[in-house]
Length: 269
Image 1 (tube, rainbow, N blue to C red):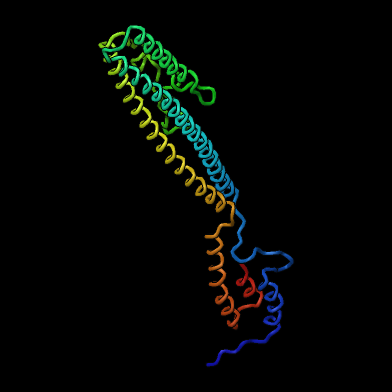
Image 2 (image 1 turned 180 degrees about the vertical axis):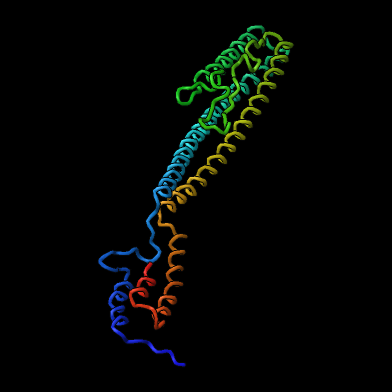
């Protein structure tokens, strides 16, 4: 039995609303484009909360990176001060070698001793002048400087003065005392080397932490951008639904016992 399409007035009238329905319009009401669905209030609030959290994360990462960068500058400033102290100790060490010789006169030893005392004073002066952002770094005022974040990253700066280095009371008046002074100076020089090595290790840790935050910030920014963009998954679902409905709507028109108005409604979103 052949299928015949009725050309009754009802079927002809069905073409009029069908023509408008194919464009997403019926009876003057503009229907959403394929895949476009207005967000519910709860969805919009959730998206806004997520976007605000992402924005906060980006700002926090920026503040932490800036604080870590300040810690790096402080560590480098402290290392420069320690280097100056090492240079002073090296000069004092040369004086102790001269004072250890038995052929020196009393006046010569006294001159060597006074010169050494001046260099020791320079070590303390370096500790008083080495500062970053108003914070003294080597005189005990910033042994454990926080980096401004909650991850426990802190700049550790041990005090470095003539007293803490054990060279504040050097005596070069005799060869024996000059030899003891030389031992104290060697120990102080080794301590300064260890401190500078530790500072360099802290710098590298801070640099790694900054790189991690700089990597995380763009990811959070892109995530926030995707939140503000149209819901791609929902659009894809809507487009798929429309493609599935179209063949069904056309097949419905082929049914002889179906009114045209009902078929047009089936084709709508």
